Length: 207
Image (cartoon, rainbow, N blue to C red; front, side, top):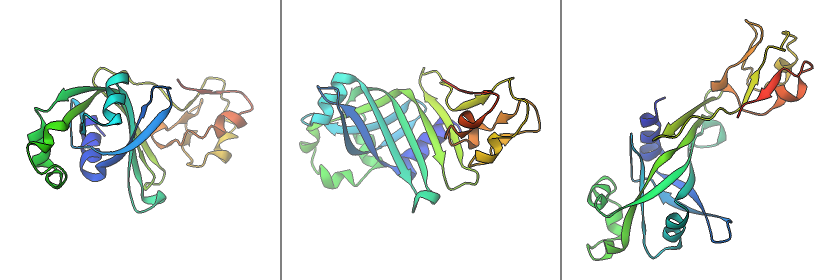
């Protein structure tokens, strides 16, 4: 999936997420927010300037969030994003209220909205994780100028095709049609079983 499609899913299908910032002691603090908009330039959400959340965003300029959509674990799609955030002011407020009309119930007057300001997560990386598929599906994506970072595990040229790792792979996502074998990264849980069991020490951690 393309980044824009994933961010659109996050905005429309998930919408409410848990976002983490850090306090003055460097300790994590979480709160619930709604993703009000998303496009090729990032994600948009709002808060009131009087909140501690606002102060933490301004001080660190960084946040991480996760949202989930599904009835239970095995029907769940989860999206996680982490990256740089910046305040872009109240100019987008009208658009965000039009896209999210329930906000009129929370801030019903123009005067009450004077406390609000919009933040943009403009550069970062994230992951799409779909447990409703068999095998599972995952995809990494980036926002802005962030570079993709390799994660998970990789099989090196030391592999002799013994298939020891096949017996412990929960998603059966190792392809032995070629040697060295190849892990299908889009189906991998990143559990590390292959690394632990490989007698040839052919598996390495990426990133």
